Amino acid sequence: MLYQNLYGRRNIGQEYAARYGWNEALHAARDRLTPPFAFRHTYEEVVKWYQAHRYTEITKLCDEPLPAGVPDSYPLNIGVRGRRAI
Image (cartoon, rainbow, N blue to C red; front, top):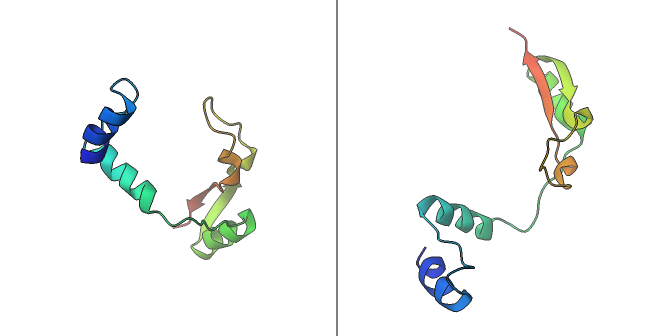
């Protein structure tokens, strides 16, 4: 918070530097400390996890239209919906 609110605003300029509160500072810290790699899973792999936990009516969300404003990288994510059997 100190870096962004004091150093950043002075060196970047008041009108360009975002002002960070506690939540924004925590979010930025998590982003900076996240490992530089990601694990990707296939739909088939995720569907098997759902089936192993007794989910039925499993739907892959790749066929749903993207909402307005969603980045183009969104289709890289895996989305699955299901109903848990009782």
